Image (cartoon, rainbow over all chains, first blue to last red; front, side, top):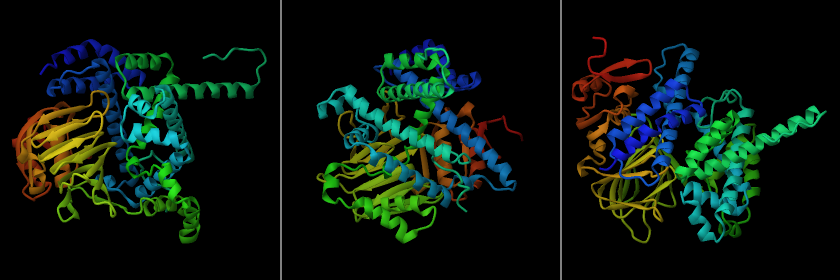
Length: 188
Length: 337
């Protein structure tokens, strides 16, 4: 496999990737851990030649950053739950979907559905093709006979609506933690 | 920022302007987020530069990305309405109202009712099947099509459409009757796996999709950028640029968990840990220092649950200890005696 190039490029790009992670809010040791993980992964997986290699490494770094954040968040939450419960719950139970998380998920689904329903039809369909079907912008543009920047405007409208809905959700429920739902203290 | 300092600006005006600046930053963040999905080298580098310009850029981007990530598990359940659907039955919105008040009423009911309607209205026939860690379930979709859910798995099926399934998270083994005119389609994390007469296994966890084929053939994301997999092949999709990686896999290893065997060829210990968690119904993780260490071999589950973990440690060449977060695999020799 010809992935020696990717590992070498990673070495060259490492300072830039570390800076990227830190602008994303990672502490320097966290950034180091993430880059170390990626380095190991690149050495272990034989990734074939990649056309946009720097983009590939940036996007891999970003994915690892998000994974890292999620794991850290879960751990923090577990510790919090631990002290709140102050009993010997074995933690495992938390991972199961409770009735409340189910309820939150449904509520969120309803909000998302409403947000999408409220979009102009063309934006909604372009959003589906891009986000759900995973089609690239250029292909959507070609098939609909519009420009790529027009496609981007439709997508921007959808993402704007989704981001605002999410921020409103968080503001309305300061004691709740994010979308995929934890306990909901309003419902008893 | 282009906020020109004009003398005697009022407080109100100032907040209005900074809000405008904020909205602008958000619009830019959204643009970046859209472009980055299929972004090339230049796009990523320009984005890194933009992020570094101003902390507010990073904050705005965080919010956009988090919102997009949060909808990931919801998207398989959403109904995308198109003109063709709407023209047929223009009566949906009033129906939603009636349901909310009439049937359930109450305070929290309104939002729940909207969701319930989602399931009982246009997508009425959809239903979820969830397994707890350590639990298994078989769902028969028709006489020749069945799906076996591994532990810790969440799936959606459709009563009216036995050719549809969606894997929200976890692992499942599919044995599918082939029908050229009506292929079986599995949705997984915004991707589609389409069968062509097949036994295949799919895992969806940590933003990663893995598909392995034991018999026949599948097409991953039909259309441009489609990847076909034959028996004895597997793929990993971690999202992002240049995403899908295809590899060989021993046919006997595909879905072997169903018969109590976990078969690995140079699999990272982190994956072994994930699969043991699902199979044994306990939480187990590999310490970061060995998470990527490759393991090759077969683990036969003996039905003793968590008790088997300790006995596995020599085979895996790790020390397995129980901690507050569940079990941890550490480098052998590092654990307390």
